[in-house]
Image 1 (cartoon, helix red, strand yellow):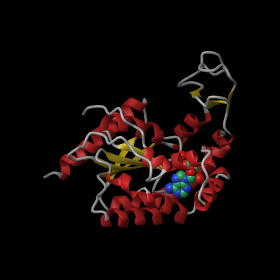
Image 2: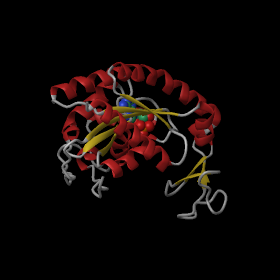
Image 3: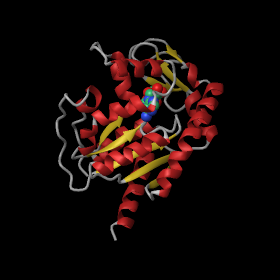
Image 4: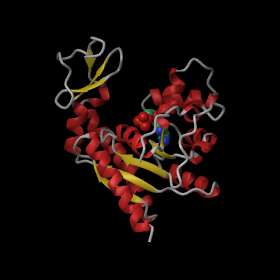
Length: 253
Ligand code: AMP
């Protein structure tokens, strides 16, 4: 599989009036949803899978972050969405849905897509299914990343972020050259409030409660591919691609 260089995601991040450079047209593109608790590395995997499979990385969190950073005027719905996000809550289903529906052209991307952070509720999963059926599209698979709770806590509680350039380090897995100082820009590193062990446990409980019904939903549809999220990002990515290829081979007969 040839790596793809284009990753503009213009139409996804800025809305359907923006253009993307079309990727190479694939005969059988991957159309994926990624599930997994915070800390399993879904965003990293989405980027690596994008390079391997060409599929476009569609993160709903990225759209809300881009909206909250941008200088352009926001629609009232997008303004409400960014307020919910900043307060640490989920954005209500109706607003998320409006945002995704506006960008439904991205689901037709000729390189395929990787949805990261959506669907997050059962209602969103039902809406996605209805939309894809009406657009004559089908998901290839839903990847569920699994990691024991104690390993997620170790991963997240060791994370340190640069106060200025936001580069992420890890006290044992990716330590900075000088403790507490960013290798890239020399600014101080800090630990996010929600990366402290007490907060992580709460986040994991909330996430498990909302993800469990999604896992059951996609399991019933026969789409679930479970991947162990242990090892380096590259190892996890290889395991994911192997799981997807096995599934494809099993369903092509
Ligand atoms: P993420 O980067 O996926 O963790 O998303 C960051 C924030 O964006 C979340 O904490 C929510 O406030 C909001 N968000 C992103 N995707 C969704 C979604 N599918 N449903 C509700 N809120 C979302």
